[in-house]
Image (cartoon, rainbow, N blue to C red; front, side, top):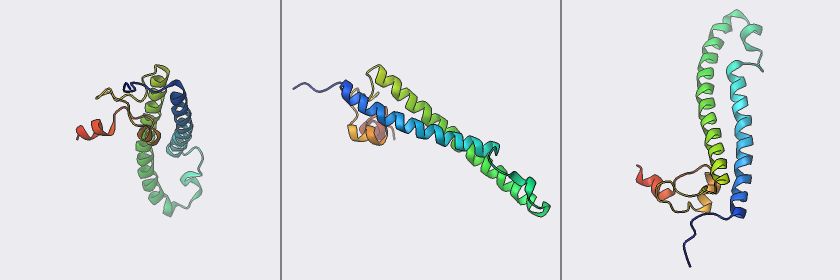
Length: 125
């Protein structure tokens, strides 16, 4: 029996559902991070006494920086998931870009935006 070189349409549909679910959650998380940066949902330091204002501003700056980094990572994750959807559309999803072999289903279920098999990923180290 010949080695399978791509996933079937039914299998691709299964992965598409997984990716769409993760994409929806990732977008919600990204929006939460953006609102943390802009403080659009908070009372900020305007409603506290002046003695705590300096401490709060320092903590707010730090948390804004952290939220900014997290938001950046989340945006990259969203873009990776969108790329996976394009690969599904092109029927190239699940093919390792290094070896050309199929990435195991278990790996794709855990990391649906993966473009490398575990072997190829380990070889990069």
